[in-house]
Structures are given as C-alpha cells and as structure tokens.
Length: 233
Ligand code: ADP
Ligand code: ADP
Image 1 (cartoon, rainbow, N blue to C red):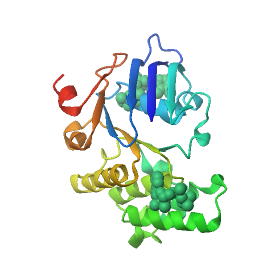
Image 2 (tube, rainbow, N blue to C red):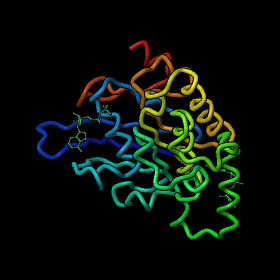
Image 3 (spheres, rainbow, N blue to C red):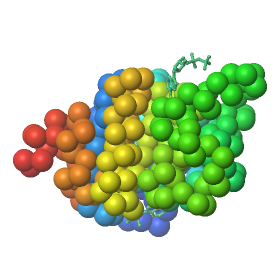
Image 4 (cartoon, protein in one colour):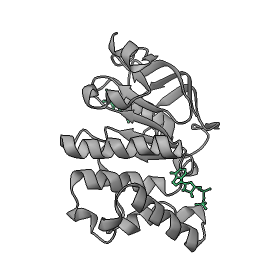
C-alpha cells in the first residue's frame, strides 16, 4: 500500500540528505510505527507519503514513493486526498471550521459527492470515533484528545486507504493517548486502513504496531522489521 524505493530527501542548502536509503513496503491494513530521535527525519518521511515533500516543503526527493500505486511526486497532495489522509503535529493548525460536524464535512467538499453521501459519511465518522455527543460543539472548547479525534475524523470522511499521523499522542496525557490509539486500532481492524504514525515516545505505542521503521539518526538508513526485532537493535 505504501512503497519507498531507495528514497533520499535533500533540503535546499543542506550538504547531506536528511534521509537516505529509505526502502520499505507497508502492506494494506498494517499499523506501522515510524520511530527515531527528534531531527532524524520522521516528518520528512511522512511528508514524502502525503506529497508535502517536495510539493510544499521544497527539497529534492530521489527514488520513488508510491501510495496505492500513485507516485507522490507526480500527484499533488490534494489529488491524493482520497488515498492518503494526513494529520500534522498540531491539530489546531489543521482546523478550518467552527464545529465538529462542519469540520468532518469540510474535507469532502472538493470530492463532488452528493449531499446525502456526505451526510452519511459524517454520521459514520461521528459514530466510529465516538464524537456523536460532541457534534455541535465548537472545536475550541474540546480537550486535546477530543481535538485529535476530530482532526483524524476530518481526513477520514474522504475514505482514504492510508492514514499518516505525525506524533498524534505526544501532546496528550496517558488517558487521551489511549483513546486516540484505540481509535487508530479500530480503523486498522474494522476498515483495513493502513496507518503510518511517527512517534518518539515508543514505549507508549509500540504494542500497537505491526511493524517498526526506525530512523536511527539524520541521514542514516532505516532499520525495518517487527517491533521486537527492531527494538532489540
Ligand atoms: P523529525 O520529524 O524526526 O524530528 P524532521 O523530518 O522534521 O525530523 O527534520 C529532519 C531534519 O530536516 C531537521 O534537521 C530539520 O531541520 C530539517 N528540515 C525539515 N524540514 C525542512 C525544510 N522544509 N527545509 C529545510 N530543512 C528541513
Ligand atoms: P460511499 O461512497 O457510499 O460512502 P464507500 O464505498 O466509499 O461508500 O464506503 C463503503 C463503506 O466503507 C462505508 O459504508 C463505510 O462503512 C466504510 N468506511 C467508513 N470510513 C471508511 C474509511 N475511512 N475508509 C474505508 N472505508 C470506510
């Protein structure tokens, strides 16, 4: 579902690539943890999946990244919305409307769906993420965990096959983090969504992962494998 073929990314003005030798595949319906210290290139790898790298952040991408068969270098992010949903580090930066319900509907606006289909998808997503009781609430009044769930819901309504998240639990207390991880697990198990999630606090999330991609340091080739194997490195 996600495939990196010998990918390197070099930002403008940098002497060395930020990531190099990135070569791995994620089968459909897996939850993959992208691990590594701050600065190792996790956001860069996620950006290469969602098309933010190179279309918005600049930089030169060598090698090839495909998501559901689409090359992310030749498809701009808005042409990938039905394939990959992206939740950035700061969910607040993400919101464009006022209420929970409007936010879930917003992501579908450019897809040309019938109003009845959009309404049904909003209802499904409210139920799936346990957001129905909060539907009319202004997002500004929600807790961190609730906001993170709204951010996830807003990219789910186009029915992406891949969900990419940058540190979705790092700003949350343990209970809210569990809530978000439970939602992600449900997406993988019930809908077969493929999830790629960056985290630097591994102990919290490693138990949920089918596979780990570890970026040991900037410019170092990743180590890829089952959690127990990679964590032993
Ligand atoms: P991580 O998510 O693991 O913290 P990042 O991918 O955010 O790592 O950053 C890796 C390195 O790339 C950092 O040194 C960062 O400063 C640099 N970097 C990230 N984005 C850009 C950009 N748009 N332009 C130039 N350098 C960048
Ligand atoms: P429609 O276009 O009528 O909404 P789809 O064929 O796109 O139907 O979706 C089929 C079913 O997939 C929906 O009825 C719904 O239960 C389920 N679904 C909900 N969310 C997602 C998602 N994020 N990814 C994949 N399937 C989803």
